[in-house]
Image 1 (cartoon, helix red, strand yellow):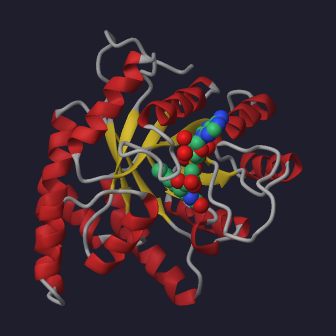
Image 2: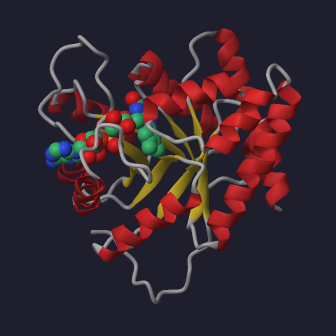
Length: 284
Ligand code: FAD
């Protein structure tokens, strides 16, 4: 298991940005603009999703190449659901040819009615496979769920599966987004008690659009606290007020996480720069 002794000096926080592959030319232009605006943050790496919203491997690779050209160290997401070992071998070879040294390794979600799970069933199988095939070439991040994965049976079993994933050879984890800092600290503490001392970086979702946030949160099992839901709902179509309130809430969350020892922040940019830049400026 990749770990650092708890007595070692605290490493500098790791900041990362997540983008998704654009679907058309206009979206491509928006992504390039956002990625350029976010460059001055000096993020340690930029990750690119795969599969979510129907994105293809070619889409993930071409977005990753564009980010590399801008100067980002990139981490494509790779998922095992519905893929054969040969598919995955070829993806890993392509990423190595592009000089990519980081991956975010996930099980992914099979769209309903889309056939078999594949030989590698869980992210822990995928991490073990990547290590078997490519040794230490890649730095591997996996997903963590402070409020439990939506298909998790119990918090204890979900933690068991997370620990297994780390033991399979992950270097660190990035969490699903959340608005309750205590859930994050609880996960970190319970994981540490099981020997996981590798960094678990909180995933941060800026608040810019209430209906979209509510829809995502229902899907991925992230709880929007009642007081935040009520305040956001009360703003109705007043997007400026939603953004201003969201900026205050998310900045306060980031501050609390960093002060409480979080090893960095991973921003779900949604391919937009403004809200992340706003949080960044407020944190400084
Ligand atoms: P796993 O760790 O395999 O866990 C999935 C479920 O199976 C959990 O309920 C777990 O408790 C259970 N489980 C694990 N191992 C076992 C076992 N041995 N036996 C029984 N049960 C087990 N999705 C995308 O499609 N594309 C993306 O690019 C993407 N990026 C993401 C990035 C981050 C940072 C996060 C947090 C999520 C991302 N997702 C993405 C969503 C993710 O694919 C889903 O949450 C998916 O349902 C689970 O993936 P996982 O890697 O966490 O799976």
